[in-house]
Image (cartoon, rainbow, N blue to C red):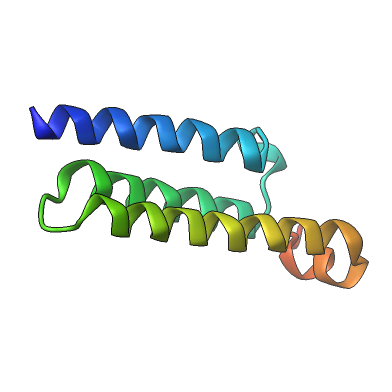
Length: 91
């Protein structure tokens, strides 16, 4: 029963974080967005299935990582130099 609760909590947190960070298609993602999405997925999977990790610790980790991702997103919107650093180079 604890696993079900952890999965539901992980799913709810990911839905909230996804709404905060904004929806994008794969074609619109930068390297930064892609890495952030993969990392958030891995962190959420740990929250859902790793019973050794306290739920409160994982929530702090998810919120911290989301805050960093959000801050970098805002920074790239405000600074053209940062945006070019996060954008994928096209050849």
